[in-house]
Image 1 (cartoon, one colour):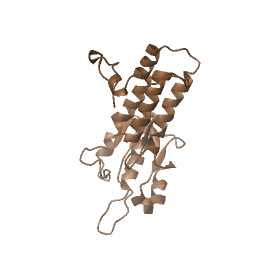
Image 2 (cartoon, rainbow, N blue to C red; image 1 turned 180 degrees about the vertical axis):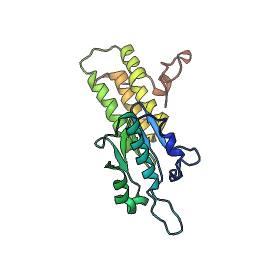
Image 3 (cartoon, rainbow, N blue to C red; image 1 turned 30 degrees about the horizontal axis):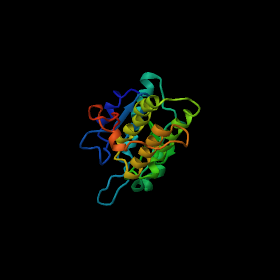
Image 4 (tube, rainbow, N blue to C red; image 1 turned 90 degrees about the horizontal axis):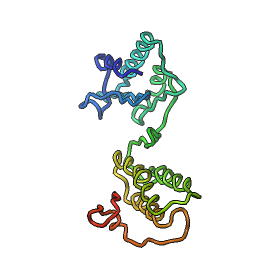
Length: 215
């Protein structure tokens, strides 16, 4: 979907911003061939009137895009996520957009889309991803230097990617540190033990460390 066409949506008088996006004028996030559309499905007026006009604006924008380009949104890959406050408008919203119903949390670009604070259970995919990488290196004879480079370039990159989007719980940071420390000194075996404290390892090379980042 072209993000430029949806500028027309912003100019439609029937459109109402999502309550957290109005100050920024934000109604869509685009990455590669994915498009996230944000709007206000329930406008709180004196009597809390139901308002589906914003969703109808999206529908007209999609129809206009289809007319001009011949490309249409795939209903099988498109989801409509409705907040708890807008459940009274559920049927009207799905009638306006012929999409499947989606639920939060869901994963996007490897990260969970959530509406609350990040919990330890939300971060389990990060731990599973790190475990999967380490298990995938089982049977490969890696030197200490080789394991160090894999930690820097692969495992810590995963943690930093999550940390750029969320404030990671301390429990998750400790679990990640535990896995990295074990892989550095033991590899994929159960033999070996840490010979240097982790905080010393995370110091820069100039301070006799190994240059790892202490998240």
